[in-house]
Image 1 (cartoon, rainbow, N blue to C red):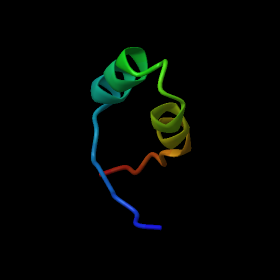
Image 2: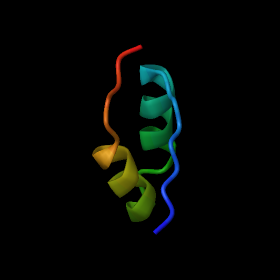
Image 3: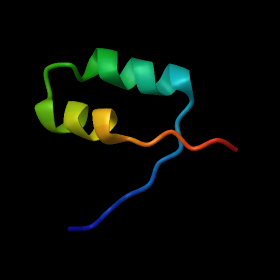
Image 4: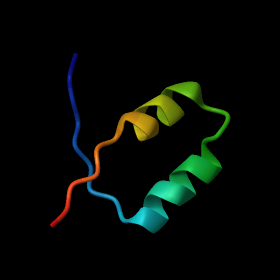
Length: 38
């Protein structure tokens, strides 16, 4: 499986969750996203 890494701000993450709450695969990916400090 190919993996992609995307850097998001907290606001971006919340907006994606809000907009894609009906999309289980996106929600799964967002919930599994790891927080990385700069």
